[in-house]
Image (cartoon, one colour):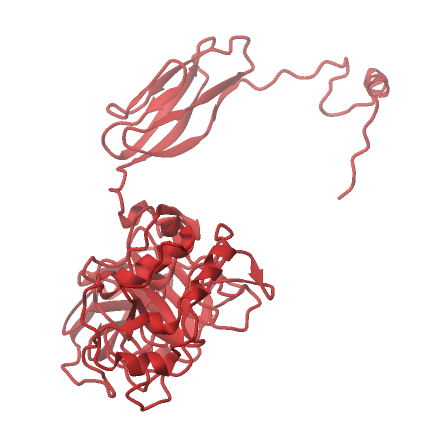
Length: 499
């Protein structure tokens, strides 16, 4: 960038007097009068019902700077003579208007979007952005496996053998923290978006397409990738849509030049539901589990409590799984090897009072909620998010907890093969009308049975309610996929777009 050359005022004045200035200065050296008008700052705002927003008005082209303030819509709130707007008790889109006192023909308006404030802990109350606070929201219902208090649950009869197999003398390790390790952020990042502002983009798969949930998905080009953009590791991409309360997770996610994504596989989770993936299906994690709800996040540790189980890894797992896992990724047939979905907890008698604050919150959660085996990796590695607010020295103290300080919570059925059951069916999938003009819409409707999740690709993605509206730009074949505990089924329908 060139550095501007500053001209002394005396020289500049001489040039202007000689007519050297052109365009913005008239021949007699008098600048033109400013255009008359009113401008508002800010030009618009979003706020909760009952909230306030201060506005300022600037009048140009008139000697009198005063304005009068009004709310355009009846029932749209109130605004003071000083420009302080107070939102009404009901949601809606409203406008405030500033009118010049000296010339009432001059005015300007600002748009206000007023929404009802979510209840504390609501999904749509989460903040937006990478690593954003969930503001008390806990993914999944209270009776979900991730959120169950297992502090008093029975110990599995094979607990000692399984703990010894993983490593009784090996210390707990936080696989997250502040700063960089070997040039990469430490932990698995996530992002919170609003699908009302973030468009859905296509996602294609390289390895596990037959066990992946189809797109499109509201994953922005700025979504953080585990390990950073240059990572050659797992490259998990986690995005929570606070508007729909859906969680989107990619494994080996790569952003494309057109802002679509390519991944080895992907899973979509309804954070309001306990529905699992089909038996035998993987996810963005080896065990067929969601990743996000098992992460230690800074916002909850700072608030003083983690109210869910954590995710952890082991070097060798059994070729089996227990719910809530739906997929095995093991190499051992030993009954002492831990199956995916195994849950352990910190023994009640372990004294955690001497640990620093951040470590103590983590350990308290491990006593009450435990941790769930989700992937193969290093022994007793627990997962969390990268955040520069972590105190790495405090987290390092977790290594004082050894494998022998844990016990296995009694397991349910151990699946060494996938159970059989009634597969989902689709009895109808149609479009009305089946042929439309460009710019028009069509309604897709379907009926089926034994399904818990529905997807339509392209354009729609996650679908509910038995119908979806589409607006294709060209003739398009839509694929409906129904998933249930015992597999999936698909049907197609075409919408013809006439010129």
